[in-house]
Structure formats: C-alpha cells, structure tokens
Image 1 (cartoon, helix red, strand yellow):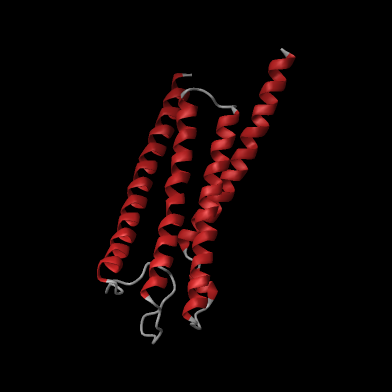
Image 2 (cartoon, helix red, strand yellow):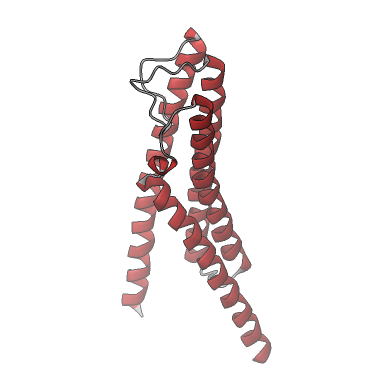
Length: 181
C-alpha cells in the first residue's frame, strides 16, 4: 500500500513538473506574440521578425495591410490563450486526485473543458491560418499548415474527451455501487 502511495505521489510530481514546463512555454510564447504585436502597433509597420503564423510569406511579393496583420495577431493571441486554459483544467484534475476525489463529476467536467480548450486552439489556429492564406492570396498548400504542435494538441484534446467519458462512467458505476451497499 505504501509503495502504491509513493508511485501516485511520483506521478503527481511528474505531472506538476510537466505542467509547470508547459505553462512556462505557453507564457513565453504568448509574450513573444505580444511583443511582435506591440511593435506592430507602436510603429504601425510590420516588424522585421516574421509573423507567427505558419503561412510563409517570405520571398513573396504579397501586400497585406498593417490592420489585417493586427487582426490576425490578436486572433492568434486569443486562440493561444486556450492552451493555458486547458492546462489549468488539467491541473484542476490533479488537485482533485490529490484530495482522493477520483470518481466525481468535477473530474469529468475538467477533462472535458481541457479537451474543448485544446481542440479550440487546434482548430482555431488552423482556421486562422487558412483565412490568412486566403487573405494573402498565396498558392501555399493547406497541408503545410499542419504542424507537430497542432497534431499533439488535436490528439490531446480528443484524449481529454475520452478520459472525460471514462470518469463519467466511473462516477455512474460508483454511485450505483453506493446505492447497492
């Protein structure tokens, strides 16, 4: 029994480490996006650093207004915030596990919210990039917009929905067992 508790504590500790790294990564990337956007606003011209979209406009004679870049940048910043929201929901589930609230509806809801957040980021980023492609009228392929980051969050989002269903069914079984006893 003591060994099982130690393994659980190690797992929670490992998750907290990954969670903190994820939050730091997300915040640093968000700061980078904000800095680019603030440079755009301050000078009202496109900064020298490349725009953070996956749409490649380098070496192409495509004119896009500063206002359009600002709209796309703000959309990216808002969508990227969903990663932080999803990570927060996952951290909420860890706290509930620590409190030994395993088969509770709260855990199922938290996993579902995390899944929605990750999928909102994935599809939102993809949609923004496709609209940006169309706006720029470039001949780039949509398949080039897929990245490892998007695929990871797509898988993670659907995994969260799966875990939400598992814990929801576990909650139903737990309540049936409590009624039987």
